[in-house]
Each structure stands twice: as structure tokens, then as C-alpha cells.
Image (cartoon, rainbow, N blue to C red; front, side):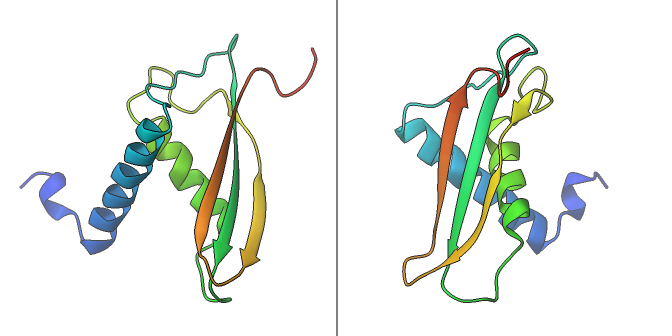
Length: 106
């Protein structure tokens, strides 16, 4: 039995979420992100939820980064950014801002 065959419903949902994030990123013209030490990429995420029962917004950001950098040569090692925290309203969504360049002067 392989590790893949042991996936439960949560792992399947997570990978479906990653596929959805990638599809939306491709529609926005963002694909094959490669962050390197010389060319860092910032990912800022703002999460909007219907009510106060929701996942941790930092984990939402981590899931977005996992999806955008899945299979990247250096992974997400050189990614910077922030979680803007949880906000509430009738229209749940995740807003992702991608910034190319260093986060601070060196």
C-alpha cells in the first residue's frame, strides 16, 4: 500500500483547495513562481469569513503559499509576507497580493 492510498478526506480536500488556488492564479496570469535568495516574492493574504467559526487565517496563508509554490525548485524558502488577520462579512473570500522583490533593504 502506498502513502497516496492512505489519504483521508482532509488531505483530499486540501489538495482540491490547492488545485483551486492554482487555477485562480493561472487566470490572473501568475504561474510557475520561483522565489530565490536574489529574487524573493512576498505573499500577503487577507481572509474574509462569514462568521467566527473558521480556520486560522495564518493557516489559510500557508495553504495559499503551498499551492503557489508546489513543485518549485526552492519551495517557499524565500517567500515573505503577512497574514492580514480574519475579517467578517457576508461575502467569504481570500484576497492574495503577490509582491516581487525584497521585503527590506540590505
